[in-house]
Length: 102
Image (tube, rainbow, N blue to C red):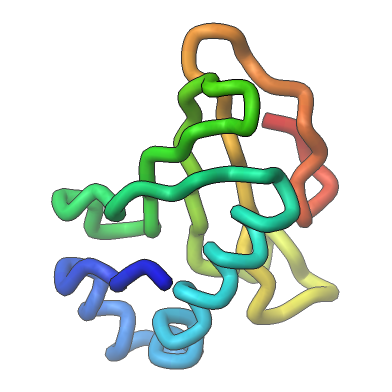
C-alpha cells in the first residue's frame, strides 16, 4: 500500500477530507489492480491531489492522479474521487471511474 504524503494533510481540515485521505491507499490499490498498474512512491511535492508514477503492463509509463471529490465533479456520488491514469507521451483512452476519459 502507498503512503499518503504529509503535504496532503491539510485536507483533514476540510469537510470529508479526513475520510478521503484515509481511503487513498485502498483507492490507489483498486486503481492499480483495475488497470494493471505498478505504482511507485507518490510524488511528495503534490499538495492538492495524490499523484504517483505508474508502469503499465506493457512497460509504458503513466501517472495515477486521485483528486478530492468536488461536488460539481460528481454531484450524485459524494466521496468518489475523479480518477485518471494518463499515459505519458502516447495519450490514453482508458475510461475512468467517473466516466471521463484521460
